Length: 126
Image (cartoon, rainbow, N blue to C red; front, top):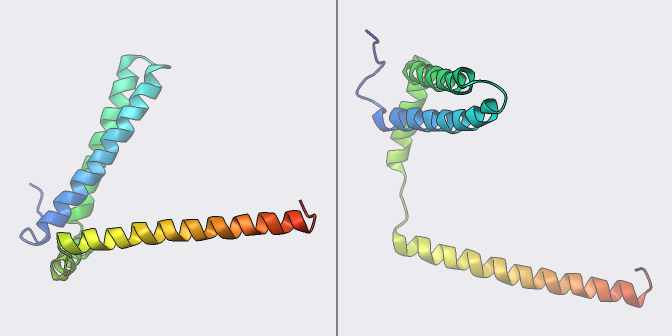
């Protein structure tokens, strides 16, 4: 039986890490399968990607239970609990400020670019 290192700590971070790595493996396997199907038979086209997903899943399980990695994930989850998250109103307000600032800077840069184009035409550079 596999012993889980510090079983009661860092559950969410470990599970999220495992699910994310496995999802990436599945997406990669799907792309690999469609690529291999053009050149090889179904055994290779579907067998190799399946083995890839299994290998990544087992490797990820091993990694999240390795003491150094598990301690890092546990510490990460602890730090994330300390974060002061913004509420919806603050996020919407900040997003509006960023969009407006980006638009204004774009207009200013367009004006500066246009001025340089006119200046270069006047002095005969372009």
